Figure 1 (cartoon, rainbow, N blue to C red):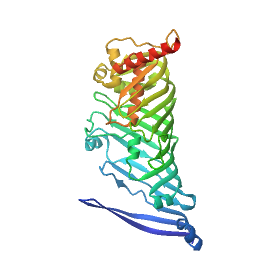
Figure 2: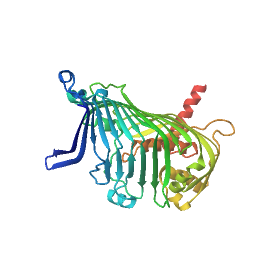
Figure 3: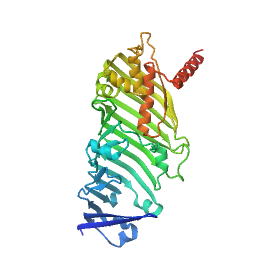
Figure 4: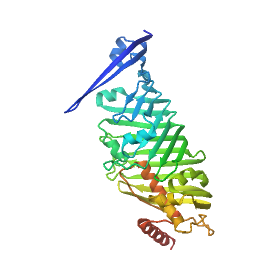
Length: 410
C-alpha cells in the first residue's frame, strides 16, 4: 500500500493525581502513512519499519500553557522509522496577551517570550532504547529558523519563592533518562529588551547569526563519571556587528554545580550600545571601541571568580539621565556612580605604558535568576573592575593576583 490517510483523528489523555483527574483532548488531527509494508520480514525484524513515513498533521491546533500565558502549536510531526528521524514542522510558542496585560497576569517579574522555528529535525532517534530501557536517546537535534523575542519588565517584583536551577541541577532532576548527543541552532535570531524603573523606553540588544551547540545532554547516572561534562558553544554576532564566541563547560556530577566560561568578543563601537545603556543605566557611550577576552571564569552554586581582559581606546562616557543614573542599582549602577561622583575613568586600556589592566571577576549568584544572567553579571563585574570599580572580594583577588605575578617574575 502506497498511502493511507486517517482523517480526522482524536486523542484523549487522562492523568491522575491523588486529588484530581485531568482529561486532555486532541481532535481534528490528520494521520498520513506513506509506503506501508507489512510482511513476515517486517514482523520478524522490526515492526516499526512498516512504513516509510508516519505523519501527524496537527493543523496548528493550540495548546494552552498551565498558567494560561502562552499558546503553543505545530504544523506537523513526522516520524521516518527507516531513517530514525523525527521532523517537527513550524513550532511556535506565543504570548496570548499584549505586554501590559501579560505582566499583570504573570504577577511577578518574568520574561514575555515569542519563540518560533521553521523546523526541528531529530536524527538517530532510537525508539527501541526508549521502549526497552525507558531511555530517550537522540543523536542530534537541529533547530532551523529559530526566532526569539524576549521582553522583561523589571518594574515588577521577583517571586520570593522563585529558584532557577543551574543546568546540572535541571538535567539530573528529570525523571526521564535522556541522552542527546548534540542540539544545534542554525543561523538564529535572538532579540531581548528590558524595562527598568524610571526608564522611558526599554533598553534593547540582539544577536543574529546565532549558532548555539549543546553537547552531551545526559542524566543516566549508570554511565556518567567525574569527567562527564555538558558543553555549550555559542557563535553569534552582537548587535549586528561584533562577533561573539562563548564556551561554557558544566561537569554533570559536580556537587557544587561548577562551570567554566571562556570566550571572546571582537571589536565593538561603544555608541552602538546606547540604546541599552541610556535606557537602563542613564549613561551615554559617547565614543570608543573595544574588545573582550575571557581566558577563564569559574563559577558554582554560590559565586563566580576569574579574570578578563577588556581592551578599549578613546572611551568617553557621559550622563544621559541623572535621575535614571541615581536610581540604577547593581553593577550598572556602579558605573553611573563613578560619573555622578566625578571619578575619572581612564579612556584607554592599555594605557600609555602599553600594559593592559586586567579586570577581576567576582559575582555572588542570585538563585532567582537564570544561568545566562549569572554568566553575564560575572562578565560585567570584570568590565567594571577594569574601569576602576572593585568590590571587597575583587580587591582581595587583585592583591592576590599581583602577589602571584611578582613571585613569578622574581
